[in-house]
Length: 166
Image (cartoon, rainbow, N blue to C red; front, side, top):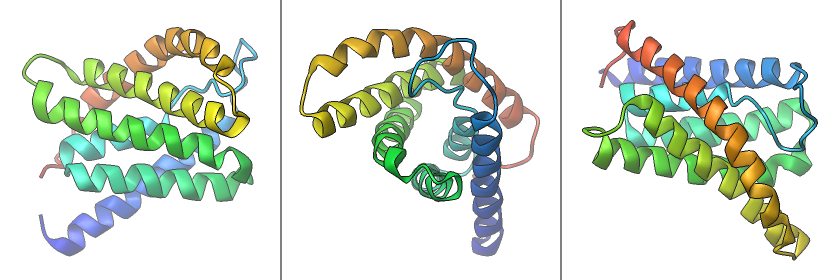
């Protein structure tokens, strides 16, 4: 892929991640759990990792997280989101690199979902200076099973039905 073409794809994918994140923030969840989200913008990250490359996927994850925090005005939650984005993208990159023979994109997404939740809770524990917040992790992980499945399934559909490739 040419450098300019890749840059255009990365720009469009980052913008799409921001739009999906904004859309997601307007959807009321049936359960009022702080930090619980659908993770729609993670579709973009997973598709980028698989279709374009590992460092590009990591870049999109970080870039969309920063811009989404600035656009929504949720700068205080930027640290939580960034912790989740870093762990999630690294775990999905490693899973794709070493486990793609054994896992579908749904499995890779589930791993990313777990590590995203872990990253958020670890950052919260560090900021609040307490490990009691770790008791919140099982709830987020259970919800993450469902959102991770949807993100993985959607990512599989996109990768299988587009001509974006490395």
